[in-house]
Each structure stands twice: as structure tokens, then as C-alpha cells.
Length: 210
Image (cartoon, rainbow, N blue to C red):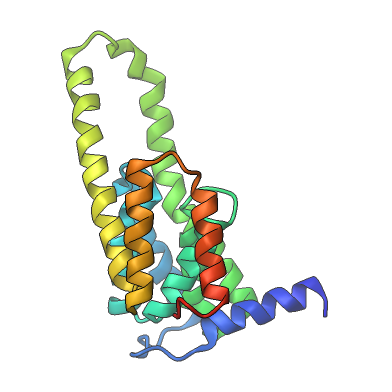
């Protein structure tokens, strides 16, 4: 089996299962515009990184537009986090999931444009702000803004973590492992790689089931 064939088969496994609801019928162009419009609207709200919008990603792709099932969403989130690169890689995978019914090539185009729609406006804004940010280095407004954003970002990330736990832990063993990992992260300096390896081993042995 070629690499391209293996990748296509893997994506078919993730995207192929039927969802709990059917997406509204759209033309290829309509689907593309819907995906781009969705992520353009979210682009300027990703305070603290792409993961801060995870709850909204799930609401839109699973509950509102029915692009994916919750299990598919969880699989794509895990894939995006395991791969090297920013957490916003998830958006490209969600875009692919939205258009997978129209074929792999159309799904690839939709995924790329979804990623561009999310990243381009926020990137342009950040570049514009950075060009003038140092002019206000002594301004009390800048200091107040920077201090206020820290707790806000941490609060949003905590809420996202709780959301992921509620979506992913569907059995007592999984919930117990998540609780143990949280305690270890907060109380030790153990590398997360060891925790990921242990969780992967438990999953491979069937102790943790999806």
C-alpha cells in the first residue's frame, strides 16, 4: 500500500462513520463558503491560542452543522495535538471532515481554506499591533491589559480542559486516568511524554476503551 493510499484509508476510517444528524444539503461551493465563513468569524477570538475555541469548534462541527460525530471530533483533536505544529491544525481537519462526503480532493481544498480563514485575519491583526506595541511600553493601559489577559486565558483554557474530559471520558477507567494525570501535572515535574506513553499503553491493552 502506498503512503497516499494509507493516508486516504486512515482518513476514511475517521470521517466515514455516519453522524447522529445529517448536514444540510449544500453544493460544493456552498459547503466551502459555509466552512470559510464559520472560521473567519472565529478568527479574532482565539485569545491564548487555538485551543481556547475548542468548545465552539465542537458546537459548530458536531451540534450545529453536523459535519462530524463527537467521537470523530475527539479523534481529530487527538491527531492535531499529537502532530508537530500549532493546535490550530485542528481547524484544517475539521474543514476536511465537513467536505469529506464530496471526495478527498474537495475535502483537502476545504481544509486548507478553513485554516487560512482562521489564521489570516488574526495574523494580520497581531502583526499590525506588534508594529506599534512598543510605542506604548510605558503606558498604564498596556500594563493593565497584559496583566488582565493572563487570568482570562487561564480561565478559558481550564474550561476547555473540562470540556475535553467530559467529551472523551466515557468510562470509569478513562476518567480515573485523566484524574491521575491532572494530579501529576499539578504536583510533579514529570514529563507529559511519560503520561502520554502510559495512557497509550493502557489503550493498547484495552484497559481504556473509546
